[in-house]
Structures are given as C-alpha cells and as structure tokens.
Amino acid sequence: MIKAVRIAVVGLEFGAEFIPIYQAHPEAEMAAVCQRTKEHLDRVGEAFGVTERYTDYSELLKDDSIDAVHINTPPMAHADHVVDGLEAGKHVACTIPMALSVEDCKRIVEASDRNGRKYMMMETVVYSREFLYVKSLYDSGELGRVQFYRSSHQQDMTGWPSYWEGFPPMWNATHAVSPTLALRRDEAEWVQCAGSGRIEERMISQYNSPFAIESTHIKFRNTDVFAEVTRSLFETARQYRESFDVYASKKSFEWTQVEGEKHIIHTGESPERIDVPDFADRLPKPIRAFTTGGVYDTGEHAHRSFIQGGGHGGSHPHLAHEFISSIVEDREPYPNARQAANITCAGILSHESAVRGGERVYLPEFTFWK
Ligand SMILES: NC(=O)c1ccc[n+]([C@@H]2O[C@H](COP(=O)([O-])OP(=O)(O)OC[C@H]3O[C@@H](n4cnc5c(N)ncnc54)[C@H](O)[C@@H]3O)[C@@H](O)[C@H]2O)c1
Image 1 (cartoon, helix red, strand yellow):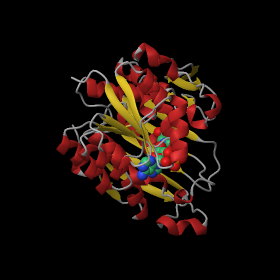
Image 2 (image 1 turned 90 degrees about the horizontal axis):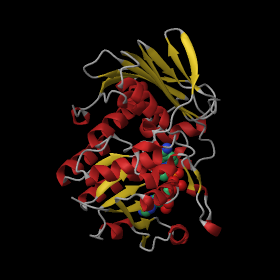
Image 3 (image 1 turned 45 degrees about the vertical axis):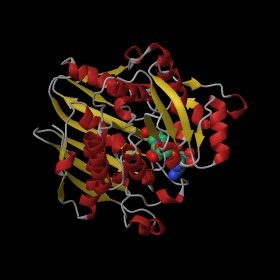
Image 4 (image 1 turned 120 degrees about the vertical axis):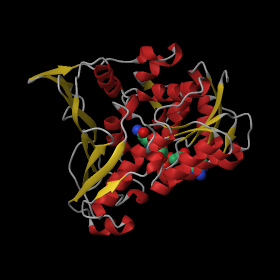
C-alpha cells in the first residue's frame, strides 16, 4: 500500500489550482509540475515551491519516482496524454472531457485495464456542494423515487481560442450529463438529440456543425428514467450556467435561474429556497479550507489560476481526495474509465444523433460497467 502518492500536475493554467491542495493533502506529495512554456512553468513552480519541473511530458513520464499524474491540458490532447501516462505505469487523473471521440475513450478504457492503473475523470460537477447535497437527499430516501432529470451547460465562448469556434456543443457535455448519471450511479443506454438553430456561417465549417443548441434525451440502462440535457456555446443569449434539476416523487431539486440566487426544493407543490451545506467534513482536515475559496498568497506571481474554490462548487479538494484515496485504498475512483467513457460518449453520440436528424444512437458495450 502506498503511503504518500507522489503526484505531478500537467498543464498549469486551470491545473495550477490543484497544486496547493496536493501540497496540503496528508497522503499526497506534490512531486513535479509540467507545461510547455518554460517561463510560465518556472513562474508557477516558484510560486508554489515545486522544484521538479518539465516542459516535456514524455520526460516526466520517465521519472519512476512519480506515482500519478493529474492532466489539465487542452481537450484535444487528453487522450494521448492519458494513454501515455497509463502505459508508463502512472495512475492518471484528467480533467474533462475524457476525450473527443468514442475511439479515444475506448483507448483509455483499454489502457487502464491493460496496465492495472487507476483512471479518474476529474468532473467538478459531481463533487460540487449542490451535487453532494442532492445525493445525500437521494441516499437518505428523502427525494423518493427519481422520475426525471433536466440539466444544462450554457456558455458563450466568443473570444476563446480559435479551436473552440464552431465546436459541437455536445462534444464537451460532461458537466451537464454527469450529474444525471451520477446520482444513482446509472449508465446511459441510448441518446436521441435535436440540433437547433444556427451559428455564424464562418464558424460552421471548422467542425461541420451548424447547431446553436443541442438538446438530448438520455435513456438510462435497465431503468425507466430519462434525462434531458441542453448545451449551447455560441449565438445564444444566456448567463453562464451549469445546472441540474431532479424531479422525484417526494421532493424535487431545481437549480436557480440566475447565478447567486438560492436553489429550490419543492416538497409536493410547496417551493422553498435553500442554503446548500458544505461537505468539507468529508475531507482530511488540512484540505477542508479549499472548499470555500480564497486567493492564495503567491506573492508577486499572483495569477488567475491560483484563485481557489470559487467557481466549481468547492469541488477541487473533493476531486483530489477521491483520486488520492482511490490509489491509497486500491479501489476504483468515481468516475473511473468506463464510467467516464459512458458519461463522455453520451455527449459525443448525442452530437452524432443530432447530425443524423435525431436518430436514436446506442452507447457502445465498453462504456457499460454494471
Ligand atoms: N470545471 C472544469 O472541470 C474545468 C474548468 C476549466 C478548465 N477545464 C479543463 O482544463 C483543461 C485546460 O484548460 P485551460 O483553460 O487551463 O487551458 P489552457 O489552454 O489555458 O492551458 C493549457 C495548459 O496545458 C499546457 N499544455 C498544453 N499542451 C501540453 C503538452 N503537450 N505538454 C505539457 N503541457 C501542455 C499548457 O502549457 C497550459 O499550461 C481543458 O481540458 C478544460 O476543459 C475544466
């Protein structure tokens, strides 16, 4: 059994947020950082006192003293970086999405199986305080029978790096798909998606995807429950939103319409605005403070990425803890490779369904894990 997991963080924009958490985690050792530009690599390394630094990921993988890597590189790099990490014998955590094609999700599942190493998709939503709260209501029986889910991830990606322009909305839908599947640890069986509206003509050619909004229905395997998931990226006016609603027989949970307002629990027909509790007590003491946020003192090197905990429902320390403890305890993390593939492929295949005029598309066998 490993006592302290020696972990490297790869990709140091969003990824840098996890460095102080691993440094404080009692069962982790922040071993190395990696990103392509030396100047930024050194800036982050110095700010956090990490001396082992790599501009070349393949060099990092040769270091046998490193047990695990946490990858935060751009989406199109995830599959190769994850497979290379698993083949090098590392446990691998990777930010969302798992990959951008069904074939690449399969490669990761196979590499994880073949090498007997953990893979975890670091999906923030399923460790957010809202999700943990609704899950605690479900697990205690307070919600009753789940009847339906509705979720969304809407944002305006105008002005982001050019590879995002015209990106099919459902290719990166894990924030909206995952809470629906994770509440009861369900599997997606098939999807049926409508592509709606049209984005600017100049953006369409990059991915041959004209849709402003994609709205999919997911049928859950061996159950009678569905989810409806909505995703938009361009040419659709709406405040940023990652939301999920759960309709159940005794109580239902609805996400607020406007960021900053309280969410709602309906008991029968009676609505009540609620305060969502913090679940920091589930974490080792030294990393509990990371659920509530705050700017970490990085001196003159202060950087946007070092702002902790604000945006993603306090999920970052829970994610780090789930990954580290799954290695220490030698158990599967959630979501593991098959579970992440099921979540990610539900999105990828929803786009395929939309392109095929709303045909039903079945998830492949390798994404089933029950
Ligand atoms: N809520 C969430 O889960 C959430 C939030 C933000 C970002 N993300 C994900 O995090 C990832 C990174 O997002 P970002 O906004 O920080 O991107 P970014 O493009 O700003 O940063 C990417 C980082 O990866 C590094 N990198 C790229 N290729 C590399 C390589 N071959 N070897 C080593 N390092 C390499 C870059 O140097 C940089 O540090 C994306 O996949 C995004 O989807 C997830």
